[in-house]
Length: 237
Image (tube, rainbow, N blue to C red):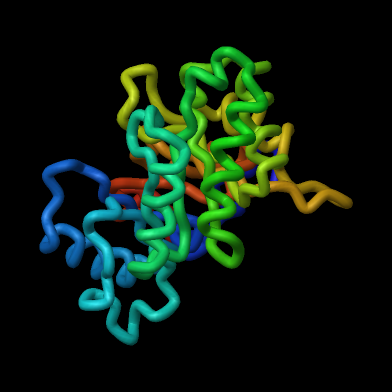
């Protein structure tokens, strides 16, 4: 998906299905996770994303939540973990019921343009959690210039990731921007004749207009910590 789409082209249900309802605050409790799952089901979100220590979620996944995907994070939020630690964290999370893993790269390697280091650590995690587990690679796009961002995206594609993701939402440099999503989608997004990778925009998406702008730029998933507030802005028709 590329190019700007008008908000009227997207329904509330379509955006909800693309949304990962996210709860990664350090102070989050099991009760907070229960509320997250309840809200995600009620709103029609496609997935929830929680810290690995909150897994498994079996006690919260009722029959109504059967189609809800469970995502978690690895190497979060700094990315300054040994690749084997990230891989072990991802494998443990999948064994506890995660369907998807959002791993944070060592962004210093991206800043240096060190493709070998980037590919090596992503491959390490990919081998630990092979398909059908969905692997998303968080690149902290706000820290990178265009060439660094494109290099990080290409490394993720080479290493067998399924998505590239803008941000953790925890770095002071900032979260997702429309321009970063556009670059990422241009570099590795799907297009006719090329399956490509998905693009997840995350960090700072707090209203309907921002969500729609990210999708218009090429995002195929959204990481949102307050999905009800975002979806409340959907057109009524």
